[in-house]
Image 1 (cartoon, rainbow, N blue to C red):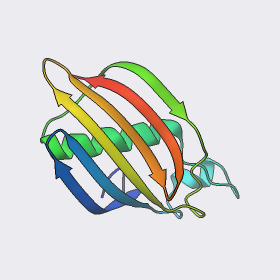
Image 2 (image 1 turned 180 degrees about the horizontal axis):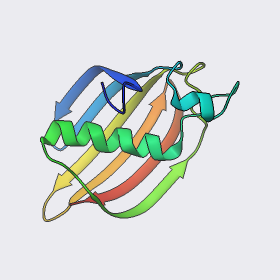
Image 3 (image 1 turned 90 degrees about the vertical axis):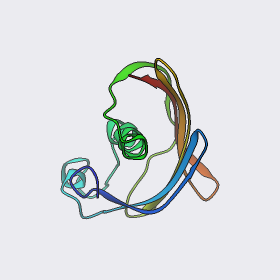
Image 4 (image 1 turned 135 degrees about the vertical axis):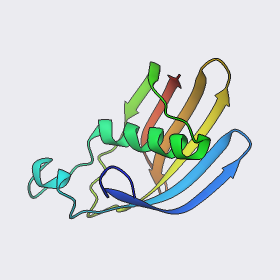
Length: 118
């Protein structure tokens, strides 16, 4: 459970320099009462936080964002319509951790990001 129980991980597949996770959003979570009443939307900052938390758990390391080169929110994630999201993360660990990540469901990509963490 992450982000105060906003989502739960139902599948986690780790490869060398990659991580793939299926998560289920809780549409009854308090965050959706204010964002937005009657039309819930998963905030973009929350989507980025999910990527960070999954990577932190996998690497067993606290991360802090250094730079963000790409951040595209392509479609709205309504947790009532699309509670299950697949998060794909590719990363390279060096002085900084370079990450390319996306969130999708079925054939729809909801977000893409390229970010560096320290």
